[in-house]
Amino acid sequence: MLKRRLPRLLAALLVVAVLVIGAFAAFAWRTAIAPIAPPAAASFAAAQVEQGRILAAAGNCVACHHGSAGALAGGYPLKTGFGTIYSPNITSDADTGIGRWSLAAFTRAMHEGVARDGSHLFPALPYDHFTKVSDADVAAIYAWLMTQPAVRAVSPANTIPFPLNIRALQAGWKMLYFHPGRFVANPAKSAEWNRGAYLAEGIAHCGGCHTPRGALGAEKPDVAYAGAALNGWIAPPLTAANPAPVAWTAAALATYLRIGSEPQHGSAAGDMSGVVHVGMAALPDSDVRAIATYIADGNASATRSAGDAAALARAAAVVTSTTDPDARLYATACGSCHYAGGKPPGDARPDLALNTALWLDAPDNFIQVVLHGIGVHDGAPGVMMPGYGRGFSDADIARIAAYLRRTRTTLAPWHDVPGRIADIRKQSDSAS
Ligand code: HEC
Ligand code: HEC
Ligand code: HEC
Image 1 (tube, rainbow, N blue to C red):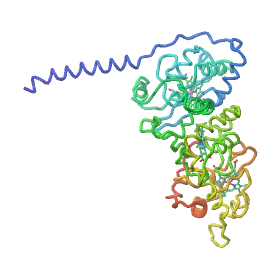
Image 2 (image 1 turned 60 degrees about the vertical axis):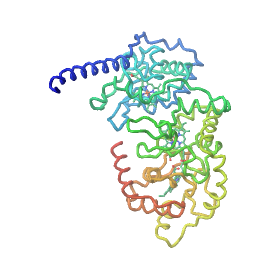
Image 3 (image 1 turned 180 degrees about the horizontal axis):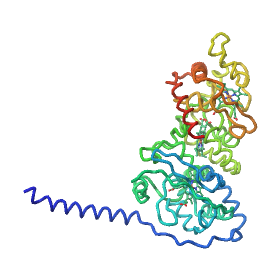
Image 4 (image 1 turned 180 degrees about the vertical axis):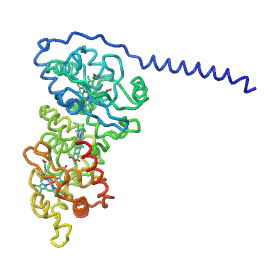
């Protein structure tokens, strides 16, 4: 019986397979949008171009699209769990950039992650956030891009392996994880809150780094802003789960996002440095405050602030022992700049007993800062911290880390700090 049924079963399966593939192909299919003659720079109003400059800065396009040929000329390698994606040239060059893209084609890329030729883009371009940006703001970014110098440059080919490199398959990813649509205001919240939410969720894509991702690389919406590891750093939780002993109020967030440092929390280094010094730097104070208002509303700072006085008192009572050898190593290496207990810290040097890096579950950010220091263009303006990566052994750094964790926090020791230091050193060597 089975023998006779088998061919019919196979034929039926084949028909189903063809139908499924056909349906998927129809679902994934996007038409090409006709190329245009590159628009003349003079065709855009100056005010629109200026608006676009600000938004492109807030979206930090340059962080991903820079390359050896220029700020927007592409070629920057984005390492993903699936291979390396090289950012494309988004200058107005007609042949190697997006000079022949119409506003409609550009808008479709930003809102739906589809290139001019109809192929699906990888979500390495944060179109899952840019989809929330208004048509007018996307048009302004287009105007700014089209008035920037055209640079001829071709990015290297991606190393995403077959079959993941089949762009049509991205349509499946979108079906599972992508919710296209402009930002919808929440009428129960203030205009300032909504402005902050619009910027943070959309163009500034804070969740792109601060929200944990699932196996296929999509942000998990149910744990938005819960903190995530990236590039050897931890983007700390921006929720009530943030471990800093003093709560992140809207005022503290606004200071941090404006100047890159906040005395009761810490400095913006690593990938956060560009967010502050390129992205936020372009926005007016009112927009930075709006983002701070939005984030502070989601982190329960209003109730958590009740613990601030106790945290500040505990930090002020810290004493650096003169007999403990670990304390002496710390005092010699770091004490000249970081307060050792008893007197208030300098404004631009975070009190280490209050510093988020020491309170995170993993020592990554602490290790990064000690290995590489904080440059004059990172953190607070004009101040810097030297790196200890060359002068200090992994064992020395691990001792200081363990000592500070033990005496500046009330938390359990970190696990395997030397192993983490070795990993981060290796990662930074291969990145440079
Ligand atoms: C986190 C990194 C990142 C950021 C931030 C980013 N991009 Fe991209 N973008 C990419 C990558 C990677 C691609 C290529 C995706 C692919 O190959 O599928 C891309 C593709 C594009 C494309 C399609 C170009 C083409 O030739 O197919 C456009 C247009 C674009 N980005 C514009 C922008 C603009 C405008 C901004 C700032 C508002 C921006 N991007 C910010 C990483 C980024
Ligand atoms: C490209 C990745 C990236 C993006 C985008 C990003 N962040 Fe961050 N953020 C980080 C990293 C990494 C750190 C840790 C920096 C450090 O400790 O020096 C950080 C730290 C922070 C901190 C300090 C938290 C603490 O407890 O110390 C705040 C607040 C913050 N980010 C807010 C934001 C907001 C608001 C946005 C959007 C406007 C944003 N971030 C966008 C990567 C990012
Ligand atoms: C020459 C002065 C100097 C020395 C020495 C120094 N630091 Fe710093 N440190 C700073 C300054 C300044 C900042 C804030 C930098 C900024 O905001 O730009 C800082 C910030 C930090 C931060 C906060 C980082 C963050 O992301 O919030 C940590 C942690 C830290 N230092 C640890 C250490 C340790 C450990 C040592 C000794 C191994 C040390 N520092 C030695 C000046 C110094």
